[in-house]
Length: 351
Image 1: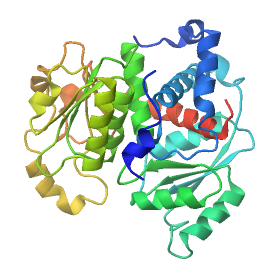
Image 2: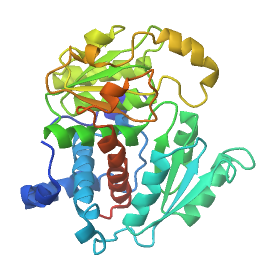
Image 3: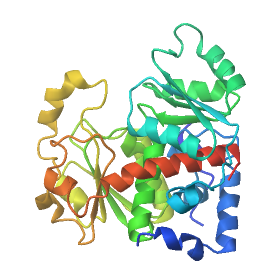
């Protein structure tokens, strides 16, 4: 199925303080959030391509609501446990820090149970067929979350399982990271629509979701990648199609300075992903000039912020930016928790 066919369904119809969130949410807005998320019940969560604008906004709003409730020590203990009795098997072909911790803690906070399965515990399609694994896990669990190498594996798992499947990262997409990034931006600016997002680095799975979300939420996207490291063409084509409908801008370039010009949000990711270690020296050479520094960011908007999904290496961004006052990387990391909680609750229809 093409990206265009997945996304044809929709269009577009300061940091929120913890203590004031409920006061600014009207009953109508709360009802609208639940209505927007109701359509996700029983569905898989594979990529931003499959989410419409209302669903994206609903997930971001629900994540913020969970952050208000479950991060407050005065309300945390007595907070609702809507996922009591629910179990999620969490398959990790690739090691993880933020994804694993946020996924397990999120299930716990909502009253459910997360069962971690490493590559030593389960090997998709090795000792038994993927179909058999999907059907067996579906008998024991309410949800399946999987972090895999090949995107075709998560797609097949989603097709065969009888419970919702969450893509916790594949070589094509990383939708959970996208939600955390956009939540962080919305917290800081109070909006997403009208902002300009810049990406400087590899045209990878994180970028794919990042760029598809921009026009769906009314934002511009400016992308700089070295020649030969561009995002997949089908994702580029779909982003441009969505931007044309939304009236937003898409810029593709090999010049990082051009990409960050006027940007409100500047993001990057690791240049050397897991499984690419043998390419390290070539990649470091190819990405020369792509390190994000304050000198580069002089071309960004005066109000710009910096994001990095972690883990970070100094080749990608220097310490002055990474630990500087405009860096939101640790808010971004924390928001992985609240956004995965919103996904759990939505797929199970329990808010």
